[in-house]
Length: 188
Ligand code: AMP
Image 1 (cartoon, rainbow, N blue to C red):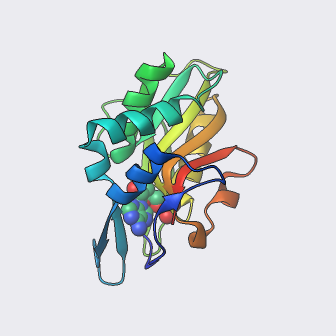
Image 2 (image 1 turned 90 degrees about the horizontal axis):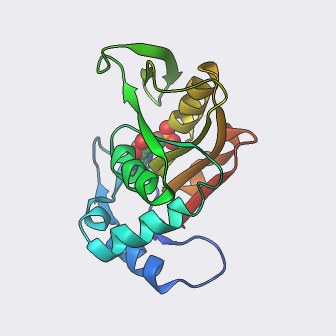
């Protein structure tokens, strides 16, 4: 978790999109969560709104392209990733926090603002050479997305893109993804 960033949530890109503008208005700012000084961007109201959830899912699914699998990052990335996979016509796999999976294909520990976190990939879900599109709710410093991409590559996959609902641009996470194309529907 990273912050505080008090910039308003807006639609990314130059073209006005009334559906996404409505989505932007549904993202809820929660100051001092999960710890003092953090401005948490809560996407729960977006997911709970049928039209907004459909708009977001449709937009992200259009970015999946030739990928044959979507990977969702724990935990809100599971909700978005699963919906995106159905619309895009792919399967979905979870990238999980440590200790949750019965069989692990690969594991990656990365630095957080304070301490470290570990992400794991389930065994027997990826064929070598699979093209994977990564999904999460928020791109902040990019550490989580970069660790997820590393995990997938370690397991023999190619990461063809990363899509988030919201990018916190001041935290400059994009370069952490290297040459993986990064897409965000909203910015703040
Ligand atoms: P990061 O690794 O810094 O890019 O953080 C990304 C992960 O942490 C995502 O899975 C987000 O769900 C979560 N996250 C980080 N900062 C925030 C924030 N300000 N509001 C909501 N979620 C956040």
